[in-house]
Image (cartoon, rainbow, N blue to C red; front, top):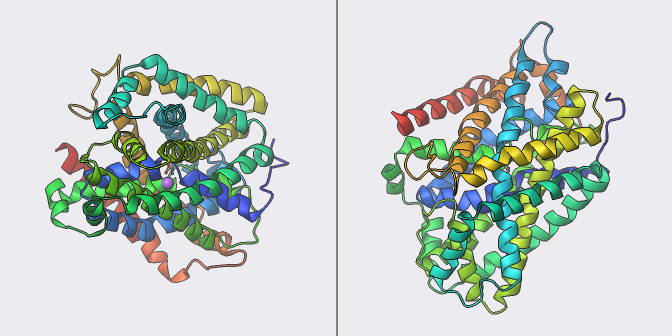
Length: 457
Ligand code: PHE
Ligand code: NA
């Protein structure tokens, strides 16, 4: 089945696609609203700390498992585990995570697409803040509209995947990522100098630790953990698959650091774009998932050439979202081809239909099913699905990867080190084995358990 595994055409392809998988709605949509909700700069500091101390090593373990096994998470542990162990059951957990992620991701990606079209066709022209907020509100009330855009996202995503790894995924994602990085810089500079935005910069950049107490430090840590793992795509094999498409010419630590730097710079720049704008237009940074949709059109309305910049912005947000959707679809498709004998075509078709159906609850959760509020008053199906993925599957799955790579009864430390360190570039330090095997998993589990306690008990 797997004799001739496809490969990326270049290292740049690998970096940009892994970055494309990492950089997405997590950076431009979720990072600003979670940061806004949990008090700004102090949250950002904790988030960065988690990225460095937990995120990067976990990313190395995942990429190593992918590269060593040459398989997706559907088969990787079967290939690498010691005989007689049961690590391979992890595949069900991880695969469920990938589907669950897409169940809400496609909806938000659809919002981006809708906003791009609205911007480009002048739909926000001359509207005041209430008018802008109304556009978001009426979109949420309209299930057919939202489902339409969600379906479009799914079709585009599978359309690109079905052209193959190099001709589809790699080629398109490369271009999208480069354009996105350039535009972010331009807009961050433009928004940072917005009149009345200084207070936003202060909120975003000067830590105020009393904000942590307000939300409860444990809840903030839990949120930062979820956000750090979400943004790097770690814990369910979504990024591991790209390790399986590269050769051993580069050590994986260097690649992981590079991917993290790219991802973090896009997240930090989104903050620079959004927070000055919130304060300049009197929008509460704690507004939640709607934040960028009710804030940014105001910025573009007030900006010379705003319609053009706004269209570009939302177009590139679509790129960011799509590059992640494509990455996860690629992963999902390889579950099918790794586990069954079905042709790629058939696997694509079945998943296309499945993901459209699975994405409907999230769409309907804002209108027909808005009575379902799984996480308490005002919460939505989206919040719930996101919580299950970001705060449950990713942290627990990350612990599994780390233990698998460090424990004797797993793949084993020596095998992991040999894989991570083969090739040129940064070495994974041998001396931190104790940290990796014991401290890292315990920190993650501690934040997880205490986070649950503070949220629900
Ligand atoms: N990292 C992606 C983002 O920031 C989301 C993601 C999470 C993708 C987990 C794959 C796996 O948007
Ligand atoms: Na990200």
